[in-house]
Image (tube, rainbow, N blue to C red; front, top):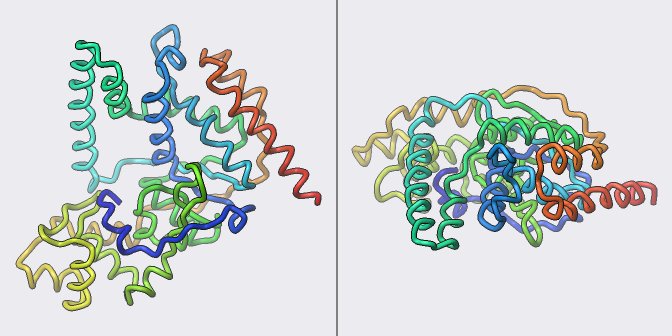
Amino acid sequence: MGNADLRDLAAIRDVAFTEIEGSVVAVDAHNWLYRYLTTTVKWTSDEKYTTADGVEVANLIGVVQGLPKFFEHDLIPVMVFDGAVTELKADEVAERREKRERAEERRAAAAERGDAVEAARLEARTQRLTDAIQETTRELLSLLDVPIVEAPAEGEAQCAHMAATGTVDHAGSEDYDTLLFGAPTTLRQLTSKGDPELMDLAATLDDLGFDRRALVDAAMLCGTDFNEGVRGIGPKTAVKEVREHGDLWGVLDARGAQIPNAEAVRELFMNPPATDAEVDTAVNPDVDAAREYVVDEWGVAADEVTRGFERIAESQVQTGLDRWT
């Protein structure tokens, strides 16, 4: 969710990896990849991931560093990529582009005055998922036998649909949109340090005394990626007023407020574009081929990915042993 206020409403708890091992997780690939891409750019010299032709593929380092934790905990990631941008999200996309452009201007100024630390920090903010990044990420995931699903529109919506229909056990995202899109459970911080979090839709609705439509109404009052919220309404006020006035329209009427395209935004959350997908979870990574692709074909510095590939290979041996004990 563009507005993280939903965290104040959601039922979220820490969960031990032992509770979720063996699970299949539909991961919001753009959300996950962007996080590792920006981290890699911020903390790694660009010569480590830039080809002789000047193509930047920091994503390859990020993928190799991020995937091992899935495998080490016997989790099967299904990477779900965004499809077409929803028209309602056009303003959000434009705003992100403007922020990247402003960051690029500031990065250039920092580099000119010799402030390498500030330049690196701002460089991370200018990252976008280029065609090269999209293509090489998919190819690397394929070599590592990680299932890929192409969403018709929002990746979070597709993840939620797959979790709701039982195609996977959980959605996986750092955003909160999966809750609004109807994912029964969402795993967050899967590849961060420490244990992940589990966000539970049923528990959230039970705590609030809401159905999902009322939860969507409250979220829209706060603001989402698809609409501006109503001035002066935070999460607690949103819940209070939806209870008092019955639904989104009752609150808007009582306040004399409007949310443009409100019906369309609400319908998008309740019935988002998604597709049924078959997923083969018999994952068998070809680590040697993946390493050759990253290091030999794309010229990524071997020292940046060696340990990641070692962890993936080791995890496959250990997982195999565990399944026979």
